[in-house]
Figure (cartoon, helix red, strand yellow):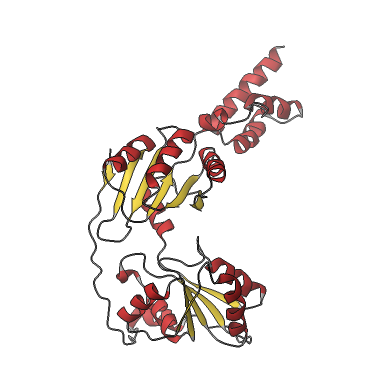
Length: 325
């Protein structure tokens, strides 16, 4: 199986924790930095943090974490290590799935009272497959300014390094635990023309690769990315059968992002229910309404996600049949 080995990364200490003056050409960027509106109330900052390599923290993220009145963290133990590394002493409060319900209201009240709060997850961008999404929704509903502080994201890192199409993609997060819901989600993914991404734990990745092979076919392309930006980072490229066999022979370790290639036109047609009109039937109906072969092919191609040239060729055949009858 073809795999793309990556060079190892050490989590080397970053720059000293003291504020660094920005000089030269970058001073214009610093001068242009956005500041909160003059409207009353504080700001909820969504601060992306490293997913493995501490060098990926941004200067702006460090500043916001230092200057915020409070940091709401998914796991205070994890975030405390990050803060200690950069000598940041901002107060912490926990905000996770088990505290989100009652905690959101209290945090929104603090924001409305004028406090600035930084929201972080254990790693990456908060509010993506993360309970922080609830806090963001309540803050917006409460009229609070919400400001993203962009940075690391396992989702984006895996996608751009996968070699699969990046123009259109779908993010599914973690698959459901219940069998019925899981199978329904997998079937939906098998019929998706866009690149699909999943988060998966090492204990379930073998099962997920096997299930995907059953619903998508063993030849569908996939990339399994693990330990992104860490010492043992790996991007395993191949078909579902090949990547499944790779992790059948090698113990899966670390958190995974699975990047699944979209379904082809023929796969989409094969997955259509029996009562779904065929491409030919759709074309005949459109042309019977007076559409030209070119316009009908364009519209039906978008609808069925089949290659436009193939649909146009079928439309021309239908037009020839009609003209000859």
